Image 1 (cartoon, rainbow, N blue to C red):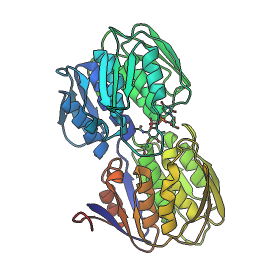
Image 2 (cartoon, protein in one colour; image 1 turned 30 degrees about the vertical axis):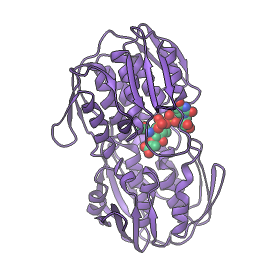
Image 3 (cartoon, rainbow, N blue to C red; image 1 turned 90 degrees about the horizontal axis):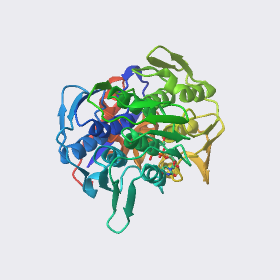
Amino acid sequence: MEKLYITGGRKLSGTIEVGGMKNAADPIFFATLLTGDVCTIENVPDAADISNAASILTKIGAVVAYKGPHTYEIDTRYVKEANIESSFSAKLRSSYYLLGAGLGRFHRAETGFPGGCDFGARPIDQHVKGFRALGASVVEDKDSGRIICESKGNLAASSIYLDVPSVGATINIMLAACMAEGTTVIDNAAREPHIVDVANFLNSCGAEIYGAGTPTIKIFGVEALHGCSYAIIPDMIEAGTYMVAAAATRSTMTVSNVIPRHLESITAKLQEMGVSVEEGDDYVRVLSPESDDKPLFPIRVKTTFYPGFPTDMNPQFAVLLCLADGESRLTESVWANRFQYIPELVRMGAQITVSGSDAVITGIPSLRAANVRAVDLRAGAAMVIAALCTPGTTVIDDIHHILRGYEHIVEKLDAVGADIRLVQLPDGI
Ligand code: EPU
């Protein structure tokens, strides 16, 4: 069992370099399957979710070779089918991309239900609607826990309107449609930067995808894809997490290897709270005032789809709002169960009342150290930030959630002056 011990109250300084985006790297790993060729993927984060995606690909016959820091070569030439055991698919949410990629290459794919963070219901009806529109049959067998997608021959292009701009459904339909016959149109598509990254990867492999990053994506089906070399974009959520860590600890710190445009909503909300943010070409610098007495202003934050404020920054921002001078309101509009981390913050003295999708947060001068849990990935990041800005030692449990998505988080924070230790304990302690 691993726990994080963080003694907070220290200022952070220097630079944290952000890694590649997990939520782009995962689908791109599965997308390599469509090429039946060799792909080199760079700027891959060292996160457990990536190892889980790599083990699924290996299990079905791909050769995934680590070629040096953040670089993998993936050879999918000898893969014969896209079928994995449920114990593998349960390890990560992104395992559902095997369905789109497998349908595109083999016209058949089978997995168990995907895992990932538990935010209450995480339906995949829009993925299924897309696959069916492309001519596949989809069976979701609740008894066996298996999902089986199949088409007789090539998929046939179609027009698909998504009821919600789902990241996963948009990517899965792009994967399946790359080699479908004709032109597929996805309307009300998700616009997140990782959608654009996956489309750019596929286009580098010979696909013809236009409009990624807008609500309408057109995919002109091609006969075959080929391998390529591709570098993943920086992780905007990792970057945002460290920006909030700097603001919460009243530090001046640089976050590098970022695309500042992807961070605009986060930067805007920090500025609204009175935090200065300087933008360079590929870095942002959070500048805190010399005096800790300068108040953080209370604000309203509403999470939504890109380019709005990301739901994956909800818990981290909640910590900052706990330190504001007055009452803030944080509204969640993507996940029903996103606020399950709040009892952990309350354990640290936070004053938060949740009513439906709204959290009303009354700022206090400081949180207090406690033993808390990482209830999911971003909730875990929030506990780290809360611990960093709180005097005394906070112990964080269930940190496997954090390690799924934040590469080298202990080393990165240690290098900017945090007192953070990962401790391995015998089970039950
Ligand atoms: N939705 C449906 N039907 C569907 C799919 C989604 O109703 O078929 C709804 C969901 O219930 C939710 C909304 O649409 O209310 C958005 O879901 P989306 O499909 O966009 O989420 P996802 O693809 O399952 C990805 C990220 C999440 C991130 C969301 C939203 C991955 C592996 N996960 O999930 O990231 O919160 O998009 O941006 O890419 C994280 O990294 O911590 C994380 C949870």
